[in-house]
Image (tube, rainbow, N blue to C red; front, side, top):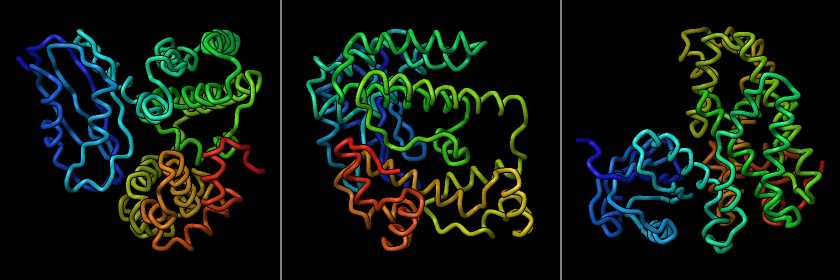
Amino acid sequence: MIFPLKMFMVILIQIENNYREYDVTMFDTILSGFFNKYKVFSLQHKNQIVILSNLDQRICEKDLYKELSCFKIKGFINIKSIGISSTSDRIDSIHTLYNDALRHLYFYKQLWDEITYEESDIKKALALMDYHEIAKILESNTKEDMGERLNIYLEKLLSINNKDIFYLNSVYSIVISDIAIYLNNLGLTLDAIFVVNKHIDDEMISIIDDVQLKNQVQSLVAKISYYLREKHSSNRYSESVTKMIDYINKNYVQDIRLDDIAETVDLHPNYASTLFKKEMGTSFIHYLNSYRIRKAKAFIKRDAELSVEHIAEMVGYENSGRFIKVFKKYCNITPGEYRKVVSGLTIMPH
């Protein structure tokens, strides 16, 4: 009764702000032009609008993407990116379709704007490697088993193309996005792991050949695997610190103060600060700044047109001067210099 039609598709629309509510039913207008018979279930989760479509036929994802990209909805500040899953006739594949759409969300520019989607090596790579492959690798029983699985995984991707620098960098992004999806399914975020664990380096790296790609992926997977084992073997954070981390991650856009953090866990600010530093190995303000800068870097990567002033506002800084100063402190370069790095895929200075 809920799903009377035979096909399913998930559409993800990433919006600019995660603190503003939108009328998600507005997307029904554009979807009606693509489906003869359909039902749509929409919800907003933080900065994502999730649309589950139950339809009677397969459609061209590329045409739908273009239509959604051009659709100007009154009241929307900006649509950041769009992810459209493949279609399936299995009701139990909805979760898989969501993750498929999430993968495409990472690659929407490459897939639709910069290259011919139907002929792209990136499309072939995404189709060849199911995101569950990363789960199998990270859940390997031994280091040897993990290394063997990872090698097979990379060899398959490199069998498509092992020379083109753009493709090799895209493969590295595929690996990172699949790890992020896997961690999200565990209730973790790649952002938080990178912020807390300084030994895991996620700076923008320019992959120049297949050897470097293998080395970078193997190093990253090993470190993520180690983190997961350590977290599993010990209850890493207390309930209070877990709540404080969650509060920061959800409210980093706001003017967060130590008193606000302490209030969420009913602790005195001084004790909350001491507890946070003891368990996290870093201060509350360092964690907050690190998290904000990671988000800023993500915004810069996704949209080259955003101004520094706008990005500063999006990550919780009241003025661009303060934002630039903090960004340079944590990255050793300015936001403008970082934009040039990610635009040109040049190697960042250390």
